[in-house]
Image (cartoon, rainbow, N blue to C red):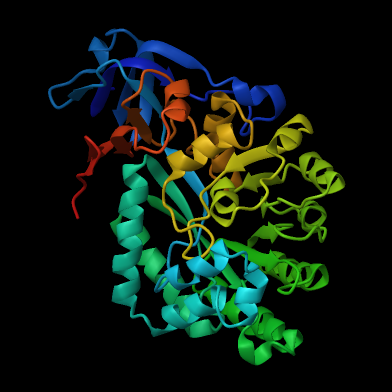
Length: 423
């Protein structure tokens, strides 16, 4: 079989090949590096991996040969927690945050999520599309080839559907693959502030079935937090979602230790996200039940809050992934490379652990580890050429974009840091 594309002269190829679909403990450091490597691609998938220039039998008349110039190549990065589709921005809250005003107080005064809900309701689908596409292009420039995106800025059926339909069209038109999550339980609308049950009934009886019937979301998520949705409310919503066929995620133990990690384990969530206040028992239960601990260090950085105890989680055997939490309030940044650097500098992870956390473990966090997250024969040909000699350099030289080229399904979509796909 002849290749469509061969990327040769790879200085260090990080394959993330392994026997399992996720990595824990010391396995997170085992990333499998091949020097002087090549990758062959056919029909958007990895056809072969080898050393040197022993790929002559894979070359045909139409085979394109690209030169990696001795640089570092990794699997495409995966951002497994974002709030990509939203209207407006919240720079008006920046001074309040700098002055130490708690987020819950901002929320209770009509800011926070509720402010973005208003902007998202008022925005047209075209406006939401253009804004999200701009962010998605930026993510792609940083080497991200798959993104999980959540609704949650409607809190009523029409706007939640609008968000998810924009995401579906964007997924069809953009090279980055999107994974869709319904987050109607992101906050309680003002009109239901004193009657959570009435809003939860609408979520469970109206929104969740409709969105499932329309095929707009694969996952269902809940913001389980003091002043938002209680443990009991979250369990009810997620259990109903599970019965409808949704896969489960949960915003857990971000501010208060409510038992969100324990609930994630009990319900079999694919991931529990944030976890800055998670208990040791909760992390232990997650590890026992293969629930991904999806950590969002850029949110801690932006809010000047404590970081999740990622070192302890790894030592306890949790499956750890890292993601941006890109959103207009607590983390208005699309830069997953910065997240990776924070993983080393503030979460005390090794560079190898960090790369594992944004590739194969992140793929597992969105139930895609069978097709992405590593460079292996048969998987999608998603990979990044970094203008760096090794992984350590990516973490050491912080605050810049190291991406030189990005290949998505075997097609060059970023060249010399510039998006080049057909727009």
